[in-house]
Image 1 (cartoon, one colour):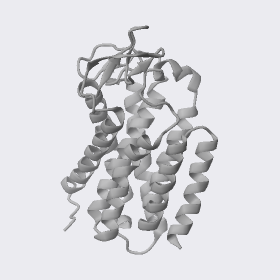
Image 2 (cartoon, rainbow, N blue to C red):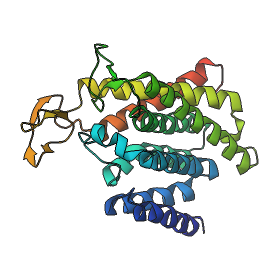
Image 3 (cartoon, helix red, strand yellow):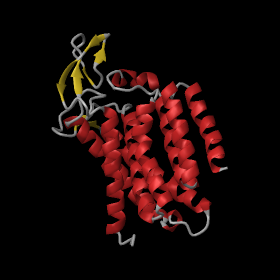
Image 4 (cartoon, helix red, strand yellow):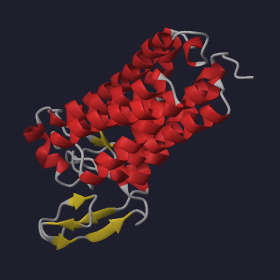
Length: 276
């Protein structure tokens, strides 16, 4: 029955996002599969935390979209998420959920909180930071860069990143308590999840920015001269100017979310929480 209920719930949520234009056709199918598996193999805490990230990021992507349109024009992906983005943001979380289903252990949950906190923090930083009145600074050089530049950070974006990770910690704690019983997820305290979610989310988001400024592939449009993440701009093939061709934005998101998960687990261990 868990698979059936997970399928129904995922179809409803992903279908609504598809109808609102937040998911492409492939994104809808990927989100449906991801949500179904997460519900069936995990608990309310696992599934609900993922949905909280998805819903909040979807709503933020629509907030003052016209104002952010200029900065987003150079992004590799638009607000309409495809299967690659769904996999990059939720794939590692699903693998951790499968690991927990096969070998239940609190370390899986700590890793998961860090992963989801990172993707949520990075999304909030992008969507809210894009509204900053001041130009962002390069995370490498500290110099001002145009809005939307990969590796650019702003004060508003950093605050949004911190709040995005904190949000995941709060939601994760509430849902783990709603699960009831002596589950491994419910063993984590509110303060610890809030702090670890906020810190790992911020750290993972900064790692994402650093990777974006160093190894992520970047192109220059030979028509308008703009630095962009995608290889086609102004209906013309753009010139690669730096980074690794295989290191697309999706891979950067996946690597940074994994780093956020490891950081979260490390923070819990440093705080004296035993996983043995």
